[in-house]
Every structure is written in structure tokens, then in C-alpha cells.
Length: 432
Image (cartoon, rainbow, N blue to C red; front, side, top):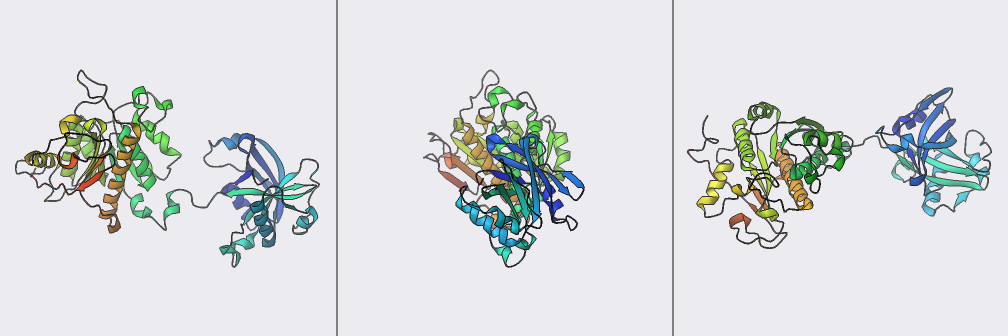
């Protein structure tokens, strides 16, 4: 039975671990034959019975077929040492039923021709010297007339989610961080997923567009969301995966609804712009600068050949996006912004999107990393400092590009300081 896995939810195990639980009782199971999976679905303590479900409630095993009745017992740690050795060796190894029964507080019932499952709880396994051994607190057994065999168990941990990373990752500071993501298309959708994975506590998603069929080849969302607003669909999509992150959708256009965005920035720590087009990027640069917030801008240039991520910080000697681009022009480098003006598949003169979905996801993932690193550095985690303010990545070899966009081979990446001082006549960097 080691090929079968028995899932043990915490809301069922806490019943067995209660001080008044006694030493034995009845249990029931749900089963998924196609997955060779079982779920503890009912626990009886004394005269009281309790239904048990696995989170999330939509998990398909909760609606599985009836898996039969069984028994649970408190047991000595010695018995769980047997279980550990049995499941390591495989299905064909077991122990005599009479020897197994001697270690239980009550007699076993006749297993009949089919057998049944016994769940054992060894409280002593939680304490020294067993707490540093692989001997588990809970074990399961398949009791037959021919012997007793180990059943693999999976115990739901007390902590599920980003809290599991607490010893290795600054989850407390990230849980207090709010990131506004403007544009949740191919790059932005990947970035939102990654930001939630990093443990960012709140994400404000800004995008007026719906998911359509032409988006599917490059977007993280599946086709069941076609026609839905991207911001709403992403919140639903990530609800089960990243429940620690609160996602707030806004169907705003960052340009047309700039007055609404301005109001949201007071509760935002950092802005990540993944929107297409010159106007949204310039608007984010302007609004973030005026609000005194850092911003990260991510895009793909050169017909999908170059990925670029810029960090804009509201420091006195750091210019905005327009100041940065003007410095490139003054230095003889081609200004890449006009190439972003037309979205793919729209308008009379449009720029076809030639980047593949995985390249766009790569840029989105890196943008999320840079955004997270900026938030952590601001919070005093200097191990997350970045080497520059602009990252360019060669997604494909492209000729004719200069400056930081002249990357040569596919896979090359370049960090640049890219700090240009504010221009005297800049409407963004100048005094209001």
C-alpha cells in the first residue's frame, strides 16, 4: 500500500490530538482511484463525529468516492519505527497482525477479505529523542488477514504559504509592501504571478483591457478567462495559489484615469509598469516621481529581440524616464520609445508582437525581481541591492541597435547605471 497516499488534513488531526480525544475511535475516507489517493474525511471522538475537508474546499478529493471505514488508535513510538522501515522497503513487506495488535490500546476487528485502514497517532514522536528522527507522529496501515502493511501518509503542515519561508526570506517586510502593477498583459501577468510568489502582501492591478484569444499564446491566464477583464481574471487565477497576497483590481487606463491613479499612489510603495506604449510609461514615470515613489518600467524592444527593465527612483540627482531617454539621444544612441507606440494587432499601422510568451515571461519575472529587490533595499535588506538602474537582455540577436541595446548574442545581459540628472526644463522633475 505504499503506492497509495493518505492525505491527513490538519482540521482532522487536531481532533485526534485534543486532550479529551481518548485513545481510539472510528474514521472514514474519500478515495480517488485514478490518483491512488485517499483522504481522511471523518473522525469519531467518543460519541461525537466530525467531517473533515481538505483546503481548498474545491479540491476534487473532497468529492471523491467513498473510501471505506477504518479505525484510529494512539500508539507507542516503537510502532511508528516499524512503519518507517516498512514504507521504505515497499508494498511486499509487512508485519504479523497479532504483533501489530499487541501495540494498540484496543483489539482489532477482523479485517475480512478486503481489509481496512488503521491510522495511528504517537504523541511521543514529537519529543526528544524522536523529534530529530524521521519517525513520524502519524502513520497509516493496511490491515489484512495476511499481515499489516504500511500506507504512505502526507500530513498537512501547520504553516502553508509564504510563512514557510520565514527562516530564509524577509516575508514580514514584503507582507507589508504594496506594489501597483500597471498593465497586466503578457509581461505584467507574469510579473504579478512572480510578485505574489515573492510574498508581496498587496498588489494593485491597473489595466482596462479584457483577455482575448490573441492574448492566450503569451499570457499566463488560460482560455476559460477569455472576455473577462485581465485584472479580475488574475485575481481569481491567483486566489488559490497565493492566498497570502491580497489582489485589488482596477479597470483604469493609467493615462485617461491618471487622477484616480494619483489617489492610489499614497498607499503604494512602488510601481511596476508593464504597459505597452509611450504614453502609459511616461504617465507612470511622471505620477510616481511626483508622488515620491520608485517605479520600475519593463518592456520588449526590437521586435521582441531586447528586453529592458528600468528603475526610476525619486532621488534629486536621478532624472525621470524622459530625462533618461534624452540623455541617450544626446549620447548618440537611438531612442527606443517610439518603437513601443503601436500595440500589436491594433490600428492601421501596427507593430506585430514577435516575442514568444516565454521571453515575455522572462522579462516579467526579472521585472518582479527588480521590483522586489528595490522594496527590500528600501526596507534595509542591503543583500538585495542591484548593480545598476537599467537592465537589458538579448532575447534574440538584433543588428543596428546601439548603446545599452547593442547586446550581440542571445542571452547576453547588461546592467548600466543609466542615471541622467534632471533637465532644467523637465515638467516631471522640476518643481510643481
